[in-house]
Length: 99
Image (cartoon, rainbow, N blue to C red; front, side):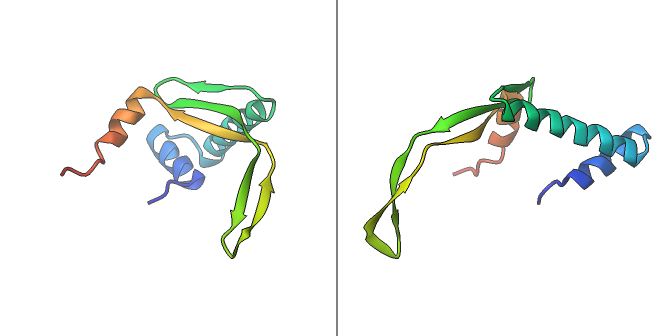
């Protein structure tokens, strides 16, 4: 089950009574600002949700599974990392199967 941006807009619109186009604009602007901050190398902290941060992944050597003898150089690159907040972690941990 995936929650799409459209689903989010509909749910917020129904709960708040706001027009869907207004909600869509706010949600889109929020996502735009998050992406803009990360693209500048910044950090986005959303309390009780989590932290988005940019990390540089080191260069390394990979292997082609079809030709294991051939080394493939993988260059360093920037990656977006997400660390869940305490409340989200606690809720997700409830999904852990019991043994």
